[in-house]
Every structure is written in C-alpha cells, then in structure tokens.
Length: 85
Ligand SMILES: [Zn+2]
Image (cartoon, rainbow, N blue to C red; front, side):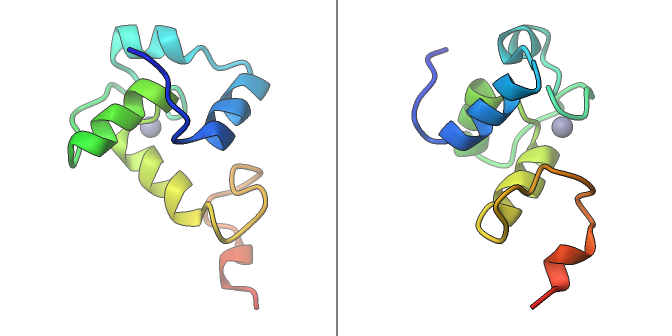
C-alpha cells in the first residue's frame, strides 16, 4: 500500500514515537491502541489505515481533534483543553 499525503502530521507523529505502521498493517492491528482492526466505517477510513495504521476508533479521536489543538496526541484524549476557550 502506498502512503499518500493525506495525513502527513499523523505520519510524522507516528515516526516520532517509533511506531512501525507497516508492521501494524501486515498484522491488521492498530499502531496506537494495539487492538486488532475490526473494520472501518467507509473506504476512506480503510485507506487511512493503510497510511497511518490507526483503527477506526483511533482515527476518530485523532482527526476529530486535529484542528482544535497544536498537539492532540500529547496527553490524555479526554483532557480538559477540549473545553477551554
Ligand atoms: Zn486504535
């Protein structure tokens, strides 16, 4: 599967923490939560897994918060910064 430019920020982040997304794609597990991948909502999400190695659940977390903070992966997903003005 060929990486695209859809999520360069995620890819660079994964590289920065040493995630081997290629291995994850081979074993059909998520690089982030380590759980087996059990399906995707749509073709785009499936494609995204090939790029980032994130399962549907983790994609939702990452991409839903991507435009709300500079570094959504830094710390707890449920951190209070979501609600700060
Ligand atoms: Zn996951």
